[in-house]
Image (cartoon, rainbow, N blue to C red):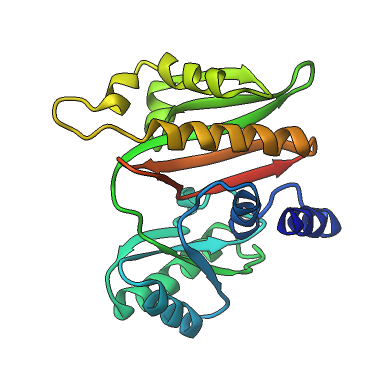
Length: 231
């Protein structure tokens, strides 16, 4: 769990409450939570090289300790199909971020594989002052804010409880395969819930955690975004 310790130590040393997405994804990988392939570029030239290496289409995301909600400030551009689009997006994101906060510290740009569209779910955790970490599961992406179709359990959870969480949401029929759409890999979601439970139990300094969206396929799943906030 070396990457996890390094990420937390770095944040504490810099007086930050939130991990960058690069750090949060490194923590996920330490705990066996599958994430989209991504690498950090420190300049436009590096971003172009990484996009070629990862393979188009790609996503560009700002990496800054001062910006938690990247999409809200124009810090994310998706489905970039070639080098020219990557170069334009790189400049556009920097311009958007500077307009939002001229003094934001920019670590670089995350170049990420564009995960194929699929059913999106969210797995998260929030620390209750009385009960400790509570795990959350629901439909992900924009649905979590619009439908609020989520369920909670106090951590730690076992496999049976993870299955119950999934079955409790109103959208469960969508996950089972609805009107000809393929079923989602429920076992892959269960593994992510169990790994998240282990992570928040072993690191009491985590105040909030969000894996949203997690793209779930017929076989396997991948977290496309990860957010961790410390106490």
